[in-house]
Image (cartoon, rainbow, N blue to C red; front, side, top):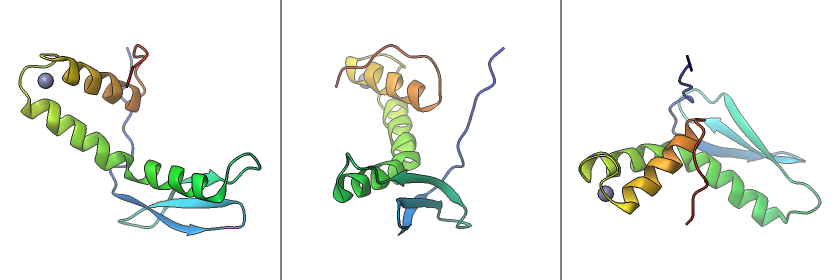
Length: 100
Ligand SMILES: [Zn+2]
């Protein structure tokens, strides 16, 4: 039996930049959620963009779930199937490779 994993619900935001990373925190209580490291192969702007993308992910997950729910029966169209595949990946479920 697989246990469903759930992230802290967010929202999250990019709090600050340390010497080596952009720090993402939970907006409600300020606890750190993730750090996006700035490594030699990535530009500062790419690392910052990655951090903002990750910080927005809880809200994007909810938005996808709302869109699928409002679009009708689950899997009714290719867009919903694509969204459900991405939702499954975000929840740590094994999902087929998606094509964007
Ligand atoms: Zn649909």
